[in-house]
Image 1 (tube, rainbow, N blue to C red):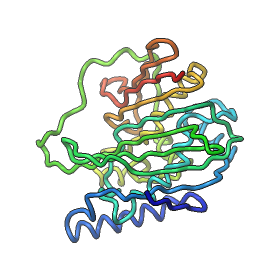
Image 2: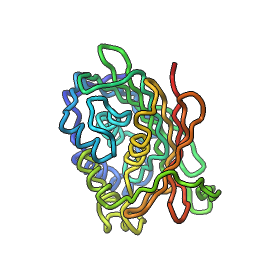
Image 3: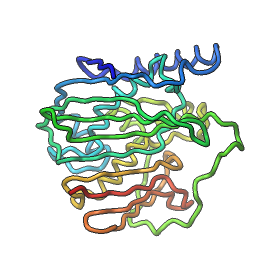
Length: 289
């Protein structure tokens, strides 16, 4: 695998603009540029944590203000590298329209603002799905050559026509919520500011409507982070946390959070509409020995 080293994480704005132009060109010629993933890993060495930025992130997502990094924070650091890979003309799935459907994070040890990271990102496992195709973007954070954090994001490109294998999210009765959260439009704009991900589907009513949603929707990784913030102080030192993103969280709305213990230091949790019962997210925390 070829390795490309960047001196710093790229800015997301130019990447999204480049991806939009690539999408227009692909539509003009028809089809994708390739059916193979780029055999490339992008790396950035010596990333320091900005404590002011960390504090802003903690406030937006509901974490306590400490020097310990939330499990989801390194995802924010690595995300521009993933976008840089997906925005390339030779990436087989157009970035515009990709849906983040699942995310797995493994915390190998507690991380702090004193750590200095090397970040590595690559794409793996392009595969067929009943609604199109999926791909995994794998990120790693290393300290002194040791992998201390890994993340795997699953993205779906919907390519099937309506009625061709499409399934609705399950409608089984949700559990009673242990907490109710009022999620305002600020959740979209504030997370966009702290993450740099200004996708209008999260921040603009017009932008959301152009992409098929009546209102803006919350970022999926904000939802995951908010759920982990609710479990803060009860998480193990080392663990994996898996989530499946289901129906988007509309802004504004009221959601119900539920968490149950699933064994020694393990948890299962979910997020659903407080009135509708529609599922937004389900996840589990599994401790690592």
